[in-house]
Image (cartoon, rainbow, N blue to C red):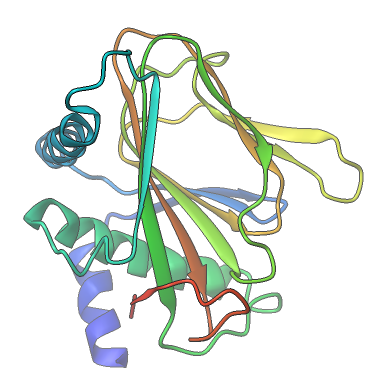
Length: 213
């Protein structure tokens, strides 16, 4: 409700919207090193359980979950609060474009990319099922040419922005927007949490979602 959102905004009063460009918004969430270390450790533990017994090195691991928040590991609780506040900020800034009604619904996943030549080619996120997509950067050694997120203008099909993120930053953008992960070849694993958000409960493909707020 309104009171709960006010409470969350007060808790995250240092939350910073860094910029919006062509509906791509970058937030500095002011999270602690400890929190991101906890998120990364949880993700790596899950990664280890998924690849246990494999004879081949796994350069890129991603897993979708129906209930990334409902499983509610303690590491995820603050990240959910951050996402709630960020989506609220975003839709307020772009209210002419996003006249959404709460509750919002969310599905999430985790990406872990190793140093061995990882990349994700240009793609969109279920554009007829979700309104927004988001990425939280929990770990990685990012440079202007390593591991960032690149965005394309849908109308011109030209790249207009490459974000070189910092740990603890969150980017939100339209689910219809073409984007990609720039090739990553760093020693430290690249760990991100991805989310798709929609403003209605049902969608054409019946994607399972958690209530976000």
